[in-house]
Image (cartoon, rainbow, N blue to C red; front, side, top):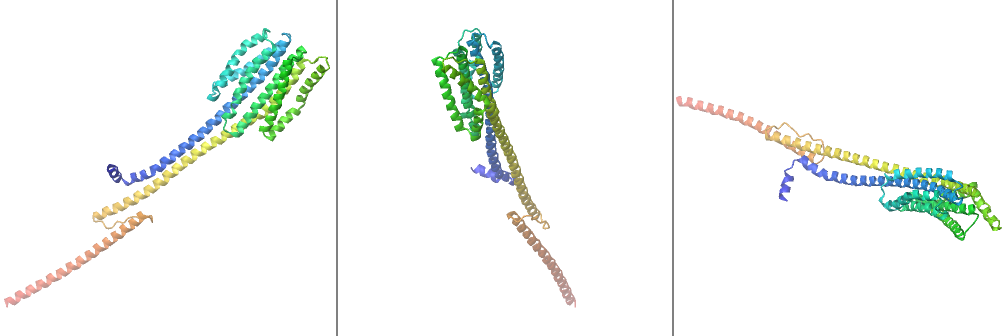
Length: 422
C-alpha cells in the first residue's frame, strides 16, 4: 500500500488527472457496450422473426400445393387412373418447386428450437417420392393417399405452430397465431374436398366418411370461433367477407344440393370435378384474401417496422455513445490542460523567484482555487519586489550617509593634524 501511495504521489499532475478521468470513461464504455449488445440482440431477434416468417410462408405454399395434389390424387385413384393423370403430373411439378425452395431456405435457417419438427417434416417429404409411385401404380387406396399428404401437412403445422411461442413481440406473435389457425382451417377444407371427391366419384358415403365429414365441419367451426376471438375486429371483418363471397357460397351450394339429392334416395349425382373446382376456388380465395393477401403482408409489415426501429435504436446508441465519449474527452482534456497550464505557470514564476527574477507574474485566467493561488503568488512577488526596492533605496541612503561620515571623519582628521602642527 505504501508503495502504491508513493507511486501515485510521485506521478505528474497530468497523469493524476488522467487517472481521475479514466474511471468515468471506462464506465461510459461499459454501459455503452451493454446497450449496444442489447440493441444488436434485438436486431438479431428481428432477423429470426424474418427467418420464421419466410419459413412459414414457404411451408404454407408447400401445403397449398400438396392440398391440390392430394385432391387430384384421390380423384385419380377413385377413377382407377382414368381421370386427372396429366393434371396430377403437372401439380406434382408445381409442388416440387416449392419443396426445392424449402431446401434452399433451410440452408440459412438456424433456429434450434424448431430443429426436431423440421427433421420430422424432412423425413415425410423424403418419403413422398415412393408414395407418389404407389399412387401412380394404383397400389394405394384413397384414404391412405389422404393420410400421406395429411402427414406432411401435420408436420408442417407443427413447425408453424411452434413459432408464436418463440416470438417476444405481441403483435407479431398474434399474427403468427392467426396464420397457424387459418392453415389448420384451410387443411380441413382440403380434407373435405378430398373426401367428397371420393364420395361423389363412387356415389357412395361410408359411415367412416360420414364421421370424417362431420368432424371436419365441427373443427372448422371451432377454428373459426378461435380466429375471431384472438384476432382484431378488422381481421374478423376480412374473414366474414371471405365467408360471404360468392365463391364460398358456390362451393357450399354444390355440397348442399348433392346431399339433398342423396337424401331423396337418388344418389348424390354430383360431378367430382365440378365439386373439386368449386372447393379449390374457395381454398384459393381463403389463401389469397386472408393468408397470403392479409396475414403474410401483416407479418412482413411488422417485421420491416421492427427491423427499422431496431436499426434506428442501434444507430442512435452509437451516435450517443460516440458523442458522449468525445464530449467527455474534450471537456476533460480542456480542464486538464487549463489546470496543468496554470500550475506550470505558477511553478515557472516561483522558479524565476528562486533565480532572483522578480519581474514575472502568474497569468491569472480563472477565479477558482488555482486562480486564487496565482493571485497570491503575484501578491507575494509584488511584496518581495517592493521590499527589495525599499532595501535598495535604504542601501543607497546608507551608502551616501557613509560617504558623508567618511568625509567628516577625513575633515576632522585633517583639522587635528593642522592643530598638532601649530
